[in-house]
Image 1 (cartoon, rainbow, N blue to C red):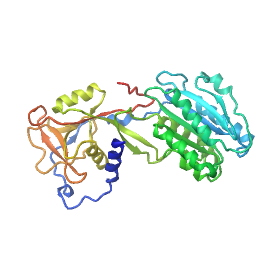
Image 2: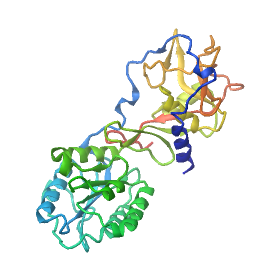
Image 3: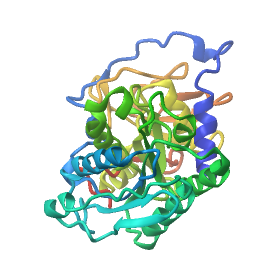
Length: 381
């Protein structure tokens, strides 16, 4: 919780005006900060539907509000979404359950029941009719199915398909959803009502609300699969996620997971440690990332940046050719090939040159930037 608070505090200051100090002045041209053929973050949050590994429970409103024909449509929607998935409990495999509810809750498929394409096409959602009064119970039951079968390095997802929302039970529904989210789960809502229902939209994790059935039905299955891929991009426990929202969907995905070193070291040792963790010393390419990085270290701490002189220019550890810099006046200094950052005023920071292997004066903290877990990357280290 403290880490999340620090990150949010840093990101909330991105828009704060930076006036009246040296950071407002143009950065002198101290040489190229470039040289890299590619950006190491380009493959983050890859989407390979056949390798999605999640614990997913679909909850379907099969009350009279949906009608029997719409319940049949929902069956086909779920089947279409599940076709590319691989079922099981190993890496790159998903467990899937399906619940139906109205004024009662019925388990249609439990974890382990879906094993192949024949099982996918072999189920049919029951039309229960009546009122949709048991949404809270269905959410709690789905959450229990996921928690009772929890897998390491696997995220839980609930997908709610509904055409109604009982305002009289709104508080209980929201509490059940928030409890699931607090445990790290992603809550997706697929709203079948024309024009959408605000209550259903408010339940969804940010960016995971879908009203395609009435607004863009052709995109429903595609959007749901991409949502599952984004849900499958996350940081292991104990790492700081640098979450950024997707401009189109609003869904937040981590552009890196950060391990902050418990003890300081010289730069070359830090770089070697990060490499052994399948990462690199954290890099900075914009103000948002700069604020984030400042927030994960103690105030005024010196911290290594993944930037090192090589010949006439500087190379980023992530192989980016970005030219963003935050040099302090008088820097960089000839003969000092490594770079560290340090908080100055507020969340402003400056960059300074330093020797790469001087343990007496330049042993300092750092963060290793690691790739998030996703459908093409095994984040278990």
